[in-house]
Length: 142
Ligand SMILES: [Zn+2]
Ligand SMILES: [Zn+2]
Ligand SMILES: [Zn+2]
Image 1 (spheres, protein in one colour):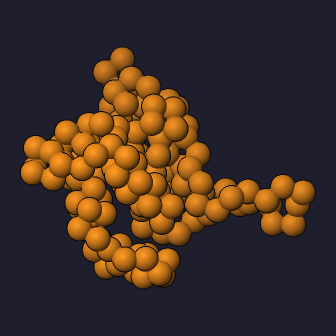
Image 2 (cartoon, helix red, strand yellow):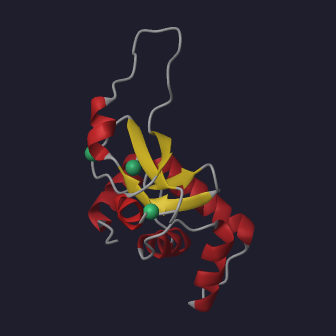
């Protein structure tokens, strides 16, 4: 999946952070892969490209991007995927196919979800809701 460098720069600047080569190579590797990656797979991929980073650095960089909302963590299997939604909704709805482990983001669904504002419970912004199910391709094969 292509990554919008302007969007990346805007987010980084808005958070008053800087774009380091390490941060950029991790983001590029995630963006180049369609399926979600674990930190260890990512480490192997980067090593193959001549970028040997230790695992704690990789986790730190992943946390950085997750915090900025450009990468999502799939909690159920601890993998990381590029945010596919260009909008800034409060929620990101990830559709996780339990048969092929494909991931897609449901923009429409996240737009329809409104968070309570004046309530006893204030949900964190930018969080990921993971929906498990079967993607259309796997449904067709069944
Ligand atoms: Zn997203
Ligand atoms: Zn599937
Ligand atoms: Zn959207």
